Length: 221
Picture (cartoon, rainbow, N blue to C red):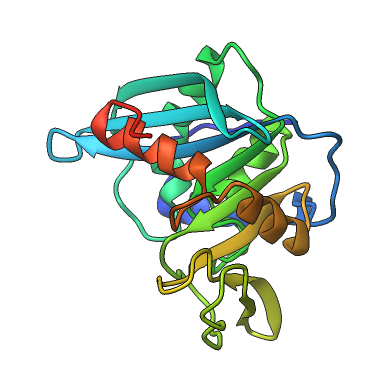
């Protein structure tokens, strides 16, 4: 597909999101999944340096088999709804360093659960032409009813009459996480695969490993 520059003005970045969201596929369009990857970004030096981490895990064992960590100067301001323009240049550099290409990406952030239905999981999935899921710790947009306090329970996340994601209780007794399709995957499969990657913790293992590498430069098992 045709790519784009990263130094777009906020106005042009929003216009691009509105154009490209029409390319997003929210049906299942993937084959056998034997590797899953977590994608996360941290910052250092008062946000002047972007740290992008990708950790590839073998599925179903959920054991890390590859990783990449890249540091780049932060080149885009913090603007809610435009985080992919701030984070993706470093993520793409990290992706290039992987020795094992993952079958499925789980991104720390939103998929279509975004004001313009084009969160970072959509942007990254479309750019790489890979199945991608947004795994958000917090809600960016939408309304929902609290899911039952039972592992795997979920309720729809809705906005302007659309179901844009799922509010998922990944563990009993913890706050829910926000799952939404990024690209080439349905909502039901997004929830299913995110939960397949959950073990003892609130966050999927993919997200947890990537977060620890992005924020602490190490795996924390």
